[in-house]
Length: 170
Image 1 (cartoon, rainbow, N blue to C red):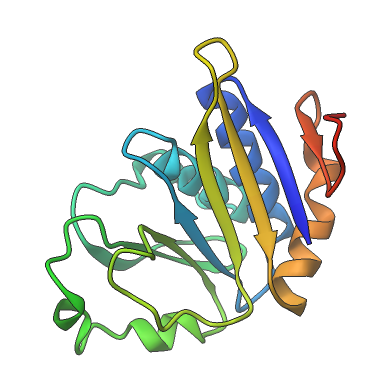
Image 2 (tube, one colour):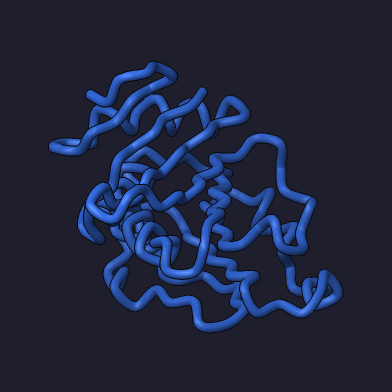
């Protein structure tokens, strides 16, 4: 299952993340892929906001982090692998517990070093379009939990252009 959303602003990316957070279920893993500055941290803030995190604005990713950001509707774990030197940095970090736990885990730069992601995950790939087009967010679900979440997202995307495995943006 795949959904492509056109994001023309930071507010649009935040809204997509919030839609994912509102639809989230326990055990959801969200893997974010894209260039620096593509909006991965903004989307993570949106997920936190959708989950009911009171201080979602304070979600940040300056370094490798693994922590419970806050307690909202579900616990959010935020993992940023951007500055990680190697997979050895993950030893003893408790990543397996959060990836397969009851909360929601959002991972930035998962393709850099870590190949042990659950098969059931929501992958969001960020790609820049032409200068006046903004960016596209391609959301792909690969299992029952992520499909259930992704299926609920379009109904929460008020005012955004999107397509669901079709050629035209709605």
